[in-house]
Image 1 (cartoon, rainbow, N blue to C red):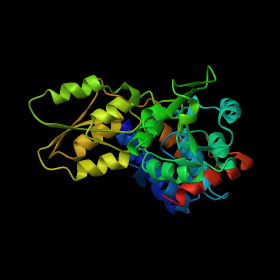
Image 2: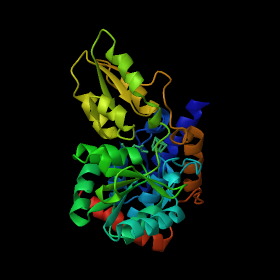
Image 3: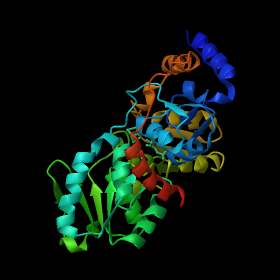
Image 4: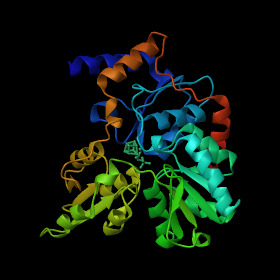
Length: 346
Ligand code: 13P
Ligand code: SF4
């Protein structure tokens, strides 16, 4: 039963003590968050993984986060992902071969005027690609700061792999939509009707399937209600959704905004379901619902559950850790250049 699983997890945690560190992303299930040493957004979890001294980091999140934790921790530390199937469909939308081909084709069009930036929701290889070409990683909480930095370095930016975070951030900085083009990795063509010399931001055609399900029609329904509803969404939502909402920002931004919200106010939230449900329980003085009435779970985040967590911890305690995430050293060296350019400025 769940309570037996919980008791066993708890006692292994107690026995391992400081040898174990268990970070949990805000999108994890409550049953997992209950055991997390820290919870956070992607930036915070990356920073925490860089500073922990624990021998084992059992990462409750998705694959790219565990890779990042491995690269930022020391060689003596072991990073474990409780279920290897906990990937991220967005990160899988840019593979290194597609990216190398895009880079050489874009080079023909734009010469060396482009700096690559990648959302941390990407494979270590893509981070390494950015590192090698002078670029950096970004998260949803520092994308604007990093884009500003990037424009100090080069005239144009290639933003991987989430077109929406790239578009929303560039637009917020005052770059008009006409100056953004989409790189389609399947047709290997730049999608734009503008003369290409006008293009400032090249957006990789990737997206998050969870956040793409929020729509302006859903926002409209809340706007038509008698009571005033505040709409807050994650910047992985489409541009029209972000523009139609009242606030947008990272998972931590969403939590902090609701924490400060006035008693009695109503909030429709456009982000992953586990977080929305948790916020609704955490802040009973305000009303919190999902913007999408059908809810939106991230299926891969949800793969980590009590049985997977217990299995991982038993293997750690037994001295045979499984699902160890170890990024190739050469890849890691280049990816760290990109990660550190971000962390120095975060
Ligand atoms: P943040 O935690 O940085 O807001 O990112 C959310 C996300 O989609 C992680 O996959
Ligand atoms: Fe990836 Fe979207 Fe899930 Fe985040 S919510 S892990 S971007 S699929």
